[in-house]
Image (cartoon, rainbow, N blue to C red; front, side, top):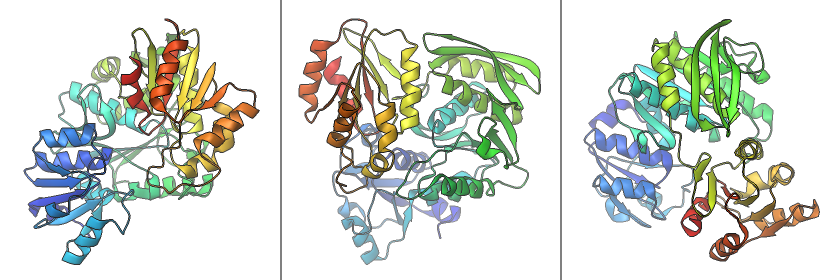
Length: 447
């Protein structure tokens, strides 16, 4: 079992899959604490580039020569047991831990730790809380599942008091965390390779709620009936909650609102990030920080200046308007398209990259329902950690969309698709790049 003493006393840690959003943040924390870090990954990325700028040696695609002398190896859920570096580490007797085990011991070492869980919105909410703590001069450490625009990274190094971490539900990885404050945003059926139905998802979240530190607090979404039997402070928009958003006004997709606490009006918030879902995220952040004693004026200033997270409804304006979003679940896509509809574009051309075969297979009908645009282009499925499954690829989804009367096309060649799109769009149209894979790389081909 990994302990914080092992982490503090180690000198060299090697990561297999170091370019992951979570593993790269943990690698940066180790570097910031004076440890030697090495790693490998299949491909280069913004995260491997960041680590290399910090003098971390990253081998692509294999780092077997870097294993020698390391104290332990860290992997993630995408790394199989037959990976060559994992096999070698076992042969050499080097301990191997999953990244959630490392995050758990690091996170639990902070006296004021905040975990944010939920199927949707946890990256943005984690970034919101971290940004507000920076504004409050609390010097937080943060592990975020995306690049926060306000500090230009997925990791923020701070003091040994506050720590904010995104808590991943995949394979119940969040059960290694023991928070003082647990933010519970929502539940939904996802990760169908490890959750067979919504009841299993709820069981996992309820189990996580039991991980709360003694005297800790749960901040839960009061609009989610599934959280009714979990004791905690509530926030919401539609159902009566401890913290509520009132007087909502929308302009070009962004909302302003007032925070009502126990029936009394408090601060006014003017968000820079679009979508009604971000009102919910901001309410969660406000309630969390208020309970931690951060002055409400400071929280409001933080939320009003929050710039967002990369690949969360990011708009690139030029000869072609391009909107990039990480949405990879049907309900996220529905929410994203509702937000885009408020932005005033004439026509929308949706490029969707399905993410994992199991998700596409098990939520296939919902994808076919919620993918809506003037024209839809479906890319091949981004396999991530999975092997190909017949009948649930991009071509299959495009065929189903066509049968539903939607103007949909399967696009196997990204460069040809970019050229085609540039001939179609006019100045006030928008190309929407949607998915959790590498569809965002099309931006460079379109702008």
